[in-house]
Length: 415
Image (cartoon, rainbow, N blue to C red):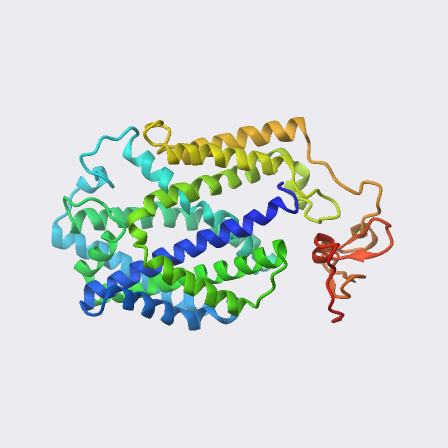
């Protein structure tokens, strides 16, 4: 969809997005500790939060992710339910929270508040490219479960409808008359559950931040090793991410959160628009998956141009709210529409081509492309055949990495 070079913007997008979310989630927990204990400067709490999360993020994700979630998910679900019940009983809440004025009470709104919130939530569409990262860790026999629960309607119903509604209810019920703020839920949970609220926040932010650190470190590593040939172990990237998170936390992340979400959102929804449009228009790729081998596709594609065009439109709208008072808060939606329409035109007028049409395809030489393993003639490592292809002379097998860096083939001769 984007070409071998254009595709490197995807791990860059995931890396920057998850790093930013690590900054935000760590800041939330630090604010909770500062508010509850009332001691130490907030900068010390920033440092404590980062130091505490590092041991969980240094190992293999398969080792700790399931175990952490098994312990913390029940605490999170029960804690949210308890906080809603306590807030409702203590404050005799009615239905006023359904018409909560939102981020800026009393300020004129060019669009309905619910639509403004929906556009802000589009910044969380980072979960869509992230899904691909985690899907690689799944088992084929669990496909239907993951489609419906882990990455499907069950998850998104909980995330956007139930979880989002609980947050709005808590902020409005416990802090009536105050503008909605990113620290509002922290204050609401501490006000309803006290020390148990701290435990709930620790469970919530630990679950999220272990994921943020894993995705940030692995995608920074992927981007620099692939695009710039800078190879460092993931442990080193975890340390780099932790240092960057601490420095960014010192900038008062809450002061620019809404604007950052909008900027991030335009890049994300542009990516999503291109991807969903591609699969909608390409039945073959929807069934078998798109081509991803560097021997078969170009460095940049027209689809990459459609992505950049849609993102540019969104950035202009976000950056110029005075010039576009109605369209600026709708920037993610406008970006999505632009990416869908522009890629549909590109796909129709310039159908995705394939390099090496006259070169034999290595996949045709094996019975099962997902089971057969083939040795690369450049680096001498073995990979599943679906990731392999012949180079231009049609006689030597080449892996993804060597095909993408033909001028700098891998030196290792490990079997």
